[in-house]
Length: 390
Image (cartoon, rainbow, N blue to C red; front, side, top):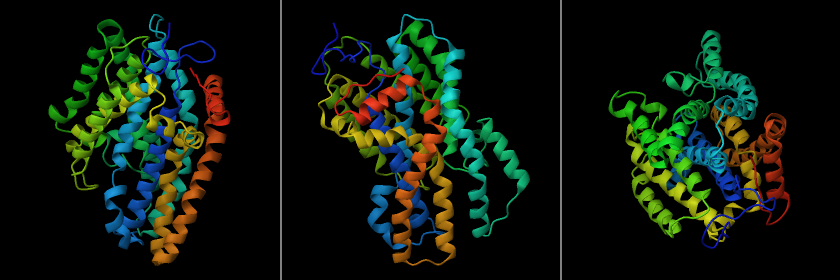
């Protein structure tokens, strides 16, 4: 018999099936996407020497807004957790990789393909305002590479057209490893084996090949941490381990490892220990939250406005960077002062959030499964609802 959130196994939904959707996980996705957006606004308007019309604010903000990289680490753990939950819930059923890839493509690619093409115009406008040449052949090649989801493998194109899209390519590559490697190893040899395999494969390019650090291949290990968390969350019983305190301890270690990080200065290859610490903290938090939904961070992340932000976080992540870049370039070209720039960004941030929601309604929501849309509706329209999704 399933235990309640106070101490044994997992709560079931009102439908009596095992949960594969947790509101606080969706809420964390939304918070992470918002932080990445604000991080890029901070980079463009405050930190970047070419466009920093609010550069005087750097001293008061660097300690808070320069850690956008670690929000990406959160996305990867979330992705592993969410994709592994249905697998863990149906552990006795055969896994169909083809069906998995079709579902992932249907869910992610309409919005992704649309934003690749929509990014071309603001990319060109930004380049012209900054005095850089625009090369149609280069843009055409970069577009093809983006559509093929391989642009992150080449340093020259990894942030071309739309910087954050490199993570979408990396996630899709991780999905291939998940379906063809991690799931078979998980089911045949156990959870620890899949985690060890992912951690090892993720660090091979750094230590054996001494290359590809800009692609952050070790994030495969963070994905596997999310898989491990999902497997633990899906179990009816677990040892009485203080997952909440362990998550808090891992978070403290993460803070110590992250503090020396400096955006644009720390080499990519030096980030993996902090990434693993952050991934461990998030994975432990997910297990703790699945067992006890009364934890304060769980309740805050499960608030309806936060979950609503999580529902269109993918769209926000996709569309924001070209808009940030073109706005920063325009303000710099106009020699905007502090007051004008502050006003412009004050209008810009809520405007982009609104545009992201509109983009979500047009290019994301129609391609979500009915179960997932129902889960979102339960959580964002009905207070205290317990949601499930496939």
